[in-house]
Every structure is written in C-alpha cells, then in structure tokens.
Length: 315
Image (cartoon, rainbow, N blue to C red; front, top):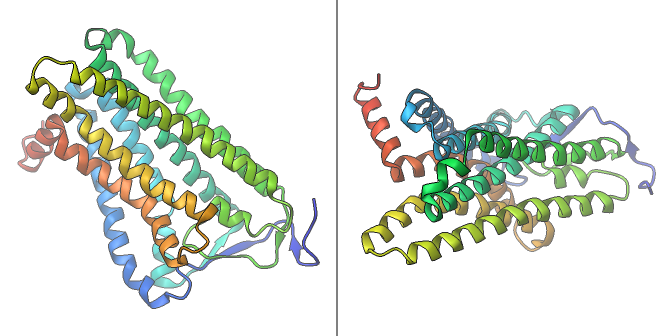
C-alpha cells in the first residue's frame, strides 16, 4: 500500500459534497423539479404498498414482488434526496464521514436489491406465461421468501464489504466530492492509497450481479416471446404482451440510466461533469418515480383500486 506524499488522514471528520460544481445558481432551480420527482416517487410507492396491503385479491406473487420493488424504490430515492435538497437550497455541503459511508451502503445495496427484484419479477412472468397451469405450484410463498432473502442478502453482503474496504483506507486532505451524494467511486477517489483491489472488486460485483440479473431477465423475456408467438390467436398475443409491457418499461427505466452512470464513471472522461452529475441524480429518482406510474397505467387491478380510492369507495 503506497500512500500519497504527506497529505493523508486515516478517518476524516467529514466530506464536502459540492453538488453541481460551477452551476451553483442553476442547482438552486434544478432542486425544484428534483423535489417534485421525489414527492411523486414517495406518494406513488406508498399508495402502491397501501393498495396491495388492503386488497387481498392482490396478494399474489406478481403484486408481492411489486411491493418489494416499491420498498426498494422508497429507500433508494430517500437515501439521497433530502441531503441533496439541503445542499442545493441551503448550501449545507458538509456530510459526516460515517453518514457518507451509510449513504454509500444504502445506495448500492438497494440498487442491487432492485436489480434482483426485477430479475425475480421476470422469472415470475416467465413461469406465469410459459407454464400457467404450474404457476401456483412453482411460485409458492416459500419460494418467494427464499428469492427475496437471497436478493436482500446478496446486496447487503456485497456492499458491506465495499464499505469495510473503504473504511480501512487512509484519505487525503482534499475531501471534496464533486457530486450531490456519496457514491462509492467518488469516495474512492479521495483515498491516498492504491485502490486497484477496490476497483477490481467493484467491477467484479457490478458485472456478476447486474450481468447475471440482466442475463436472466433477457433469457426469460426471450422464452416469453417464443411462447407468446406460439399462441393461437392475436388476442392472446396482445394480452400476453400487455402483461409484460409494464415490466419491460420498468426494466428499461432502471438499467438505462444505471448503465450510463456506471460507464461514464469508468470510461466517460469526455462527458461534461454536469451531465454526469445530473444523470447520477436521475438514476436514483426516475425509476422510483416512474415505477408506480407505469404499474398504475398498465395494471387494471391497481388502476381500478386507485380510481376507487380517489372516489372514496375503498373499504
């Protein structure tokens, strides 16, 4: 381990989150749509959880997985947005060292959990469409609990090791993070030591987790497409495609900004910093905001329940 010359400290008291460097006046105004998006995400996901809880006809694998997704979205968006708004509106840039590591933990752990939940939902749709008569016997409550436990533990264990490795390393005197929240790679750049093991571990985890999940999701939807095309009628085709459409939209809303943010960190040296920072924020805001809207529009049972609730007829 080689330390940078002369300017390192083992445990800094705090870090400075710069927000959007060079765009201080702009970031005051951009906080308003960001706060509106966060409010939509919180209200939408809480509404979704409430509807699934009170309607016993929705206590099925598809909707229970959807409830897991709503919980991860709530944690994911709320782990960064309050501090971001304080930075943008009140210029309170300082974040305590341990609070920064906790933010790193929640962001990455729940990102991995969300990816795992999307994978589990893809498997559920695959079984429901390709093996409809065996769905209830294959996707049982015990199978759901096991899947949920594996997804949760996978995220917690991988990211706990992230945070442990970073916490054992010395930091430089320069402790400014040019973002509005603590992200693993941004924190790692402040370390005054060789971080090749940390970077290699991060790449391994990212490709093993996200790569595995995306492979399973892709294969599931390929088999779903093949099964749908073998159905006898066009109406059956349309119904099956409609069942998967909302899930595909949610997958794209999550993975596209996530991959852009990840690849920009690694290879996007010519991408303007302001673009990178905005996408890094949108990556944690857009999926939590869009997911309940997509399922509200595309799922009849949830759409009907929301309509009844607005009319005051929910029991």
